[in-house]
Length: 357
Image 1 (spheres, rainbow, N blue to C red):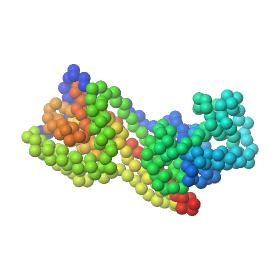
Image 2: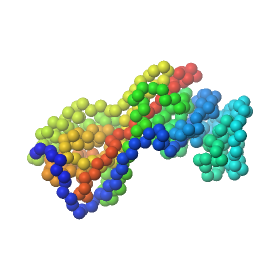
Image 3: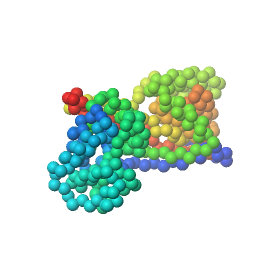
Image 4: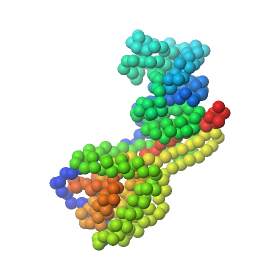
């Protein structure tokens, strides 16, 4: 059967409700801040220098520094000493902030606030407040940075730095550096962000369960193996379609994970393509099938709107679902289309200082 653009007929059975929107976020649109992490294996003096001279402009504006407790006092003394070397601007700090912190030090327009126990105000009388806290373990610090979009991580231990950087939810991570945007164009992909909002009902728990298992696979190899088995099952079905079989075979043979890696002038640049989550997709053409298969291999899940006149596509979805792939058919009636199938994460490592220490 030939694919057409025929619209799917509407049904009243509302199994899954989906609400989607599409956004491009550029640098000027980021209403966010940067978080710093200083581990016990870091060059504390270099980290302090980078944070002291950092910009106060968003999204690079530093708001929080997490320091491993073994070097917390060392970092505090370093900031205290360096802040006394610079003539300070007339920065007004509220009495509440002074009362609710153990120490604070002013450097130009920045106020480094240690052990603050009140509500963290984003802006305090025009000053650039930076809240400094202690943490104990790598596991703990990862729980403290769940909302960190930008991250400056300081560690001279390569394995520790990679463990934190790869598990952090941040889209841009500097390792032993801060605010440096020099690098290959591919490293700027994190600047673009598309978003899908899904309002799921009946099938929410089941597809999420399958997605969790799907994303736990080590890379795409296991997902490819599952898809091969599902394709063999589909080929043996009476209503299978040869065009779809050929298309999926080509994808499974040629698929490569979306990664970029380069070393230049003492810096390592890494950009990773990561799954977005559960995404709605409308299938009217073979190109849509191609998008869905590639997206599943990346690690996404899909709620699929299909035309009733394409039973061969419906059969493919059912076979994939039976094989454990995180896909399900949307029976709400109206076609919906997600916006983003991949998000990017960039890690920029200044490793020259690691080998020097």
